[in-house]
Picture (cartoon, rainbow, N blue to C red):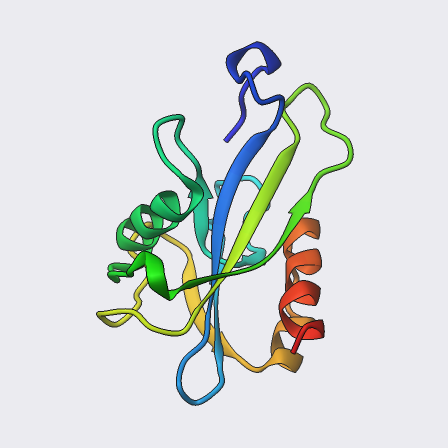
Length: 143
């Protein structure tokens, strides 16, 4: 995800992420592969928004690639965002989070790491990157 400041006219790196909730009320979290930044920590799945796509298009693409599921744009509900206040030599990250309750297929970890289904309390106890902690507060405090 690292980019030099001159590579992005926005001045930040936009990321789309999804808070997937099953019918039984559990939420999906993805454990980052150990060889990546924040390796071993749990996050809402998603990825970098490409220059040619909208955040919702990015999330649909990323969750198809990462989890093997299909989404419709109408099923994505904005839930909040989180942004890095400081970045050290990199573009600061801004994560746009969407709540997702409808999809086709059974989510599975296709690009490494693990996935798990958790209660709100379970997610609170997971080790997460700082921005995902902020996002979890947006999702759960709004409920």
